[in-house]
Amino acid sequence: MSLPAHDLIHELEQRGIWLELEDDTVRAMAPKGMLTPDLVERLKANKETLILDLRVMTTLRQACEGIEGITPAQFRALCTPEDIEYIQAGRFSLECLRAYARSFAEGIQSGRIVFHPTNTAGKHSAR
Image 1 (cartoon, rainbow, N blue to C red):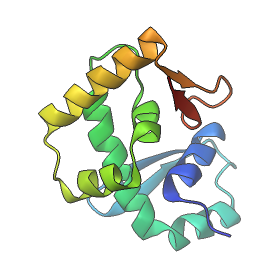
Image 2 (cartoon, rainbow, N blue to C red):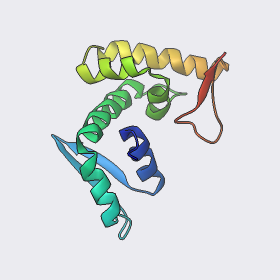
Image 3 (cartoon, rainbow, N blue to C red):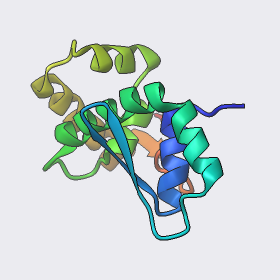
Image 4 (cartoon, rainbow, N blue to C red):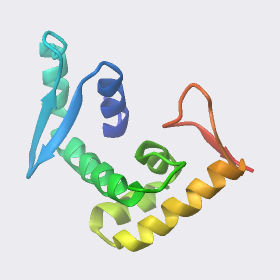
């Protein structure tokens, strides 16, 4: 069973493996011995979705830059599938996404948005 790209990216980051996107090439930065043949095959099998999600994460990193109280992973977790499609299609301006990031950060800081303590990139609830 294949994981959504953002889950695979999160799993790799937990192992100390970072992915970078350069044009349409996904580069894996990993400590020696961590990039197993199985992981390489999974990366190849998920290349298209990885590229899309890495583009989304790059955009969300830019949107969160300089805003305290929210990470790009938290922002990603708060987005609906439709939001992600719009981000992929470039329908949100960076200014709009920064406004959302500020709003989400305020929600997190005020306690209206609560992330599960063991998974700040995933499960959350809004009060």
